[in-house]
Length: 232
Image 1 (cartoon, rainbow, N blue to C red):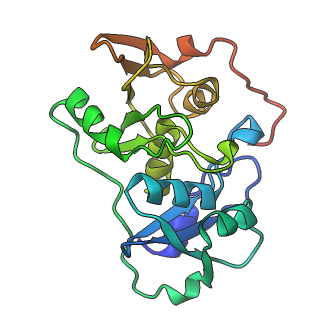
Image 2 (cartoon, rainbow, N blue to C red):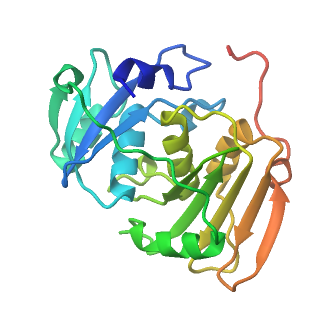
């Protein structure tokens, strides 16, 4: 997958301004990220936010940030957060990027539980894991927290960032698990993001007490924000 292909994977129906970047982690892994817009504009995931959070979810610390020309949202924050070295993506010749796709787990809850140790929950100590399914492949995610809470991503959005960056746009189901708490349930922000990409899909919630509940995404967020007046 080359950089131009990655750029085309951006989900930018509102601004029409695709963005792609690549983060090199502390163990040498190369983690691409693309811009993922939302009908609720503040919930847009920047390319840098996607790449850094994915890198962290895979157990690496961001070290180098590769950017194309142009302005990048949040670049100053992430550069300072991890003391990133900034380089041009033109230096990434014949680069082999991390593959975010995984095989569909034979045991969903077992896989979700195994992911919890990868969560970065410095502030909350509340690990969450997620599995996002397409027709043929699957993407996993854990919640990531950084110094500015608004810059982190929930497990559901990390999984989605992996999928969109990989060029997958059609999804079938989503599963979520939390280690603690009364129920496992996507937050309000995630529900707004979920409704954009899985508007009528089944969401499985594996609760900390070992019970399971299933819901349709539209039922998790009735009267979700939409507007035909927005450009799309």
